[in-house]
Image 1 (tube, rainbow, N blue to C red):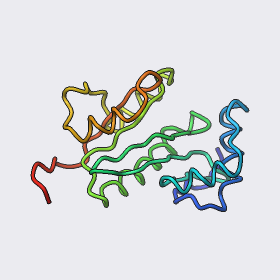
Image 2 (cartoon, helix red, strand yellow):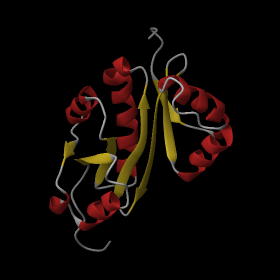
Image 3 (cartoon, rainbow, N blue to C red):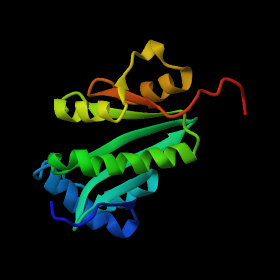
Image 4 (cartoon, rainbow, N blue to C red):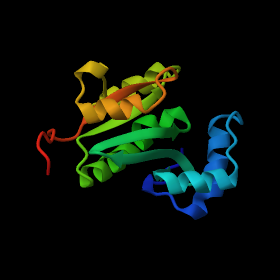
Length: 164
């Protein structure tokens, strides 16, 4: 990484080509996302990009029923996780709090590196049993395919137990 400062910002449609190139580079060509598919994904949820001289991380997330969900997350190279990853998560959490989310859920591939899981734990995310979670959190988890991912959660504020 250069000494260029980390910048975190919302992704824009004109970032689609750079995002596709970043994903291909980060996965050593295993994931190739056509330009039109990137543009479509940008329209389906919010994305943040972390950049130095180029894109070094992205997070795709959405909020519904006071539950924020990060289901697209790539930091490359992994050695940037402590700095770039932290900056990226700070921005996602800031936006989730603005939307009054109670929790932010991370969907982690079951084959994720242990170092990544330790990093998420350092940010306050924990694996929790489905039965120990409030209804809306459980529903958000059940909507995501569980065989290939597990969930880590970070509570952002007190639960709302009465209708607003």
